[in-house]
Image (cartoon, rainbow, N blue to C red; front, side):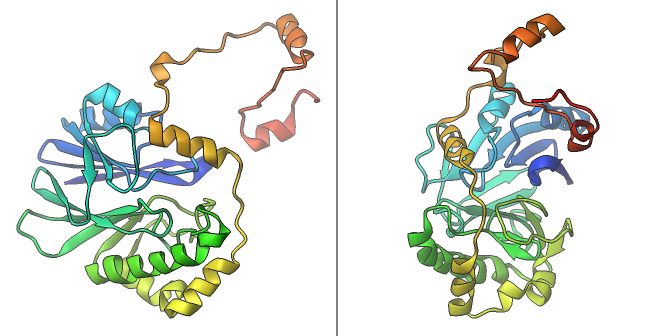
Length: 286
């Protein structure tokens, strides 16, 4: 078995490459997917499945892109009307790669289509060894519950509490936790800087897991988290399937004179894609 975490640092997003016996699945892939095909080539493995934990709202998912590159089958929850994918998973439904058994756990709360994936060492094993928890449970934190609107935050928080306590924690303290985001993500309030955890460690250190249901719901309702306007566009992309990068128009480079002419156009928008430190050291005024 091979497991590789692929990090998108700017979004604090984690995707996962899991392979066994020459077969691979990818969990929550980012849109620039060549990193997964390169890993598969290195492992002499075929990407069989792409698993989505939910529709996501903070980045464009790469499922359709990766399927176009590999012919992998896409799986996600049956609770959301995705316009693509081969597997609309119900709670408890199972997929296999190599000797591994992957079980879908329906865990609404962050969104109503949230799914976690418990991984078992063999088709006969009854004890999970790891879980891909999406935006349901993070290291030191839980997923936000306000995305459907503040008026539904109480209902979503109650769902999230039940999902964590009825589906995730019962997997066992030994189970290793692999969430979809790390510290810095706006999908949770105060996600820990620790990259990895276990259910047992979270049970002992994650204060939100020590709360009763009413206290948990009250805490979640009181949170004031940023919701950038691009979230809505990302959700639509992710539900319908974003345009393929191979079909995107590639911007043409401009010389200095052409650039000066362009920036004075009323419709011009300039995006500096360098790191913040580079921008601070030198940039074109305005």
